[in-house]
Image (cartoon, rainbow over all chains, first blue to last red):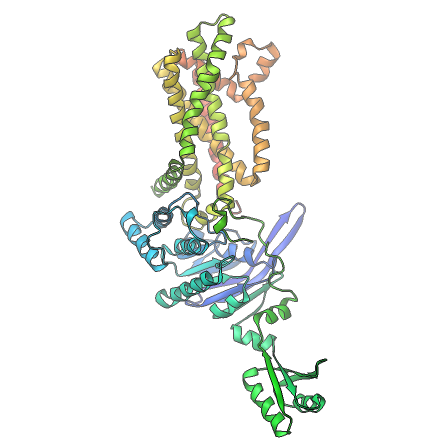
Amino acid sequence: MSIIEANELTRTFRSGRQSVAAVRGVNLRVEAGEIVGFLGPNGAGKTTTLRMLTTLLRPTSGTARIAGADLATAPREVRRRIGYVAQYGGTDPNALVDEELFLQARLYRIPAAPARRRVAELLEQLDLGGLDKRPVGSLSGGQRRRLDIALGLVHDPQVVFLDEPTAGLDPHSRNNLWEHTRRLREDHGTTVFLTTHYLDEADALCDRILVIDHGRIVAEDTPANLKRQLAADVLTVEVVGDPAAGQRLLAGLPGVRQATVTSTGGIQVTLADAEQGITDVITALSGAGIGVRALQLARASLDDVFLSLTGRELRDDPQDRQSPIPTTEGADHVPAR
Amino acid sequence: MSLLVDILLVFQRHLRISMRNPLWIIIGLSQPVAFLVLYGPLMTSTLSITGVAPERAWQTYVPGVLVQLCLFGSAFVGFGVIAEWRGGVIERLRVTPVSRVALLLGRVLRDVALLVVQAVLLVVVALPLGLRASVPGVLVALGVVTLLSLGLACLSCALALTVKSEDTLGPTLNTGLMPLLLLSGVLLPMSFAPRWLDLVSRLTPFRYIVDGMRSAFQGEVFSATVLSTVLVALSISVLSVLLGVRTYLRQSA
């Protein structure tokens, strides 16, 4: 049985007399131990779906089972089994790090003594050692994000939902957080369901990607498969002599989708798979006695996939929630959005 | 049982965060003293011009200040709730199995506790200034203050989570509270008011609260006035807590 299973989830918001369908029938499956990225342009229904799966919003229709508990009939049980790390964390800048963790553990009904042990364990696990008596507001962006994640893990949940886990973090902190996410799966078998605005993040971290657009899932596959199906590698070859002959030759090769002569006299070759195709191109050219002066390869990216799926860039407008904006306190450490 | 534990956990959290803020404590403690020292003498001498004995004047003034403290102290609790909602704190807590009711009550109890401490302080500081009051009466009055601040704080939280904007909450509270405050007779007893104003004031709940607390301070603990005060405070409290709970239970809040 899948650890997350949603069937025809919908959510309609009423604004005045109009009703707006934010989610129009989402079906998804996530297996235990997967790291799944949930992507979509702004307003596609991403946040709404996430809020439904985490019991924060009641679906208008449809069903879902999360970690074996039914979302509609046993939301409390779902809460017990999942961890949720919201985009803006939700810590009080004036609370102390260990206070927040201890409270969270107690709210999950962990008795005081084991809760204290668990707090110590998490501080260690997420490299927060020595920060236990610091006010949350004095932490750096990366530290605070790790605290947010620790809060989502106090009860050792089977599934953890991360909403934009690295938004606004510097590259070093992002890499560090990716490491922690991977280790979570390796050491604890935790399933991770995350949303992100960074396609490189989805590519580097996720086993599988779900793309939502206009309230429906429009694609789901591994990053490699998505790129193979929906985007192409583009090889630009500069040859010695007449490019037209080379272009005619390459256009006929298997694995070449298209070959055109560019305005600068190069040959642009669109390949289904560069790993195979690049050798074929060079072999064919040298077999025909055409000298190669330079080669340039642009690998397919998830950006291309995204563009071809939704017709939009992922990051056109970073404001996609109506709700929380970061608190002003400790503003230096809050993701600049 | 687990509800009580939850309430206690949430209460402790808020109290701990507040206690770490010295400004909160200083403002909390200086407010009642300021009311007494800066306005009390003016009020009591005004009352004595109209023939009220100085002793009686303090018995009239202190219960009024208690109600005023209560109204404003608890009405503005909602601002903190909006800040928490915006910081994602409420959302984070809502994803845990904690009782929604505890999220409201635990939070509100911190403010009730502050108000009770302020009220006690106010009475104690008023004693050397000339207040003489019946001990059981003062205890009843403190009970009324507790009920009232619990209710009003819940109401404020419910309103805050409904409008979700300080810019709306502030004017709404001011517009609602100002007439209630003026009509309650907090500043000057309504017995001085023209007949029509007195009648209008009898249509507002706080009139009964203030009248009853004044009677209680004068020692008439078992009078009908005091009983109706307790009943009004209790109804305000129960209704407001229910409304607050309903708001907190709503999924989208």
